[in-house]
Every structure is written in structure tokens, then in C-alpha cells.
Length: 144
Image 1: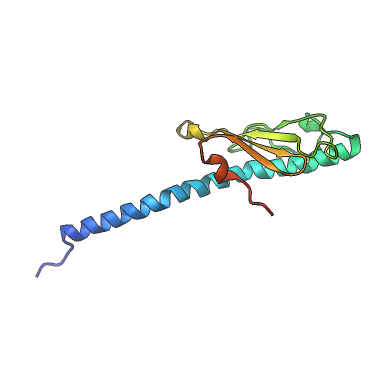
Image 2: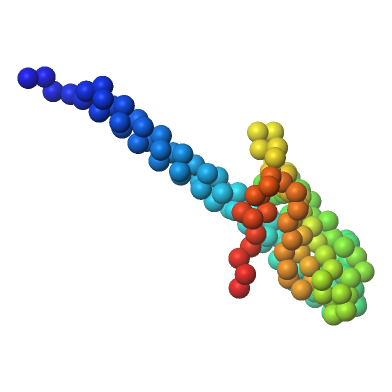
């Protein structure tokens, strides 16, 4: 008696693996992009706090990263995002819904559709614009 797998058994295993991959891969890519976005969200959160401290002392936010009391990494040190762009002249008390910092996602060529922009308002609300149709739903920070 010969031992081994029949062709039918092998085909069934390949089909099952294909179905599992079809279900699992999109979820994997969503989780991976959310992880990449965490870099930008954490950076924006730190910048927001520094901007609020700066505005408390001087009355408005600054556009110069060097004026802040934190070390903002250069674009070369950021893995997935470009240099942050700060908005000057925002008074967080009177303009809480104004954007005070923005970062642009710098995707590689094979991820060209995932170029998007993350912004943070003075009141701490994150905004996402651009990218693929579902990108901003994927990277949206969870509400506390």
C-alpha cells in the first residue's frame, strides 16, 4: 500500500490556503498602514503639545520648528512621513479648530496610492486627506 497525498487532497489544501490569504491579506495591509500612520500621529501629538506651550507663552503658534521646546526629527529620520509643516499665528483659545501642524505621507512607488496628509487642530482633532478611498478610514486615530 502506497503512502502519500492524492492530487485531490493537495488541491483542497491549496484552495483553503488561498481562501485564508484572500481574507487575511487585506486585514494585514490595513494594520500595517495603521502602524505606519502611528509615526505621523505621534509626531503631530508632540508638536501640538509644544505648539500649545509656545502659544501659552507668546499668544500664538509658530511656523518655525526650531522655536519649539522639542526635538522634531528631520525628514531623513522619519521613515514614512516628510518634514512637518507648522502653522503660525493660531491662537488655540480663540481658534481651537484651526490646523496647527501637518505631515505628508511619503509612500514608495509601489504604494503610490497611499500618499495622504495628516493634520492636527489646536483642539487635538486629527484630520486625514488624500490617499486611496479607504486610507483615511484605516489610519483615523481612535477616539478616547
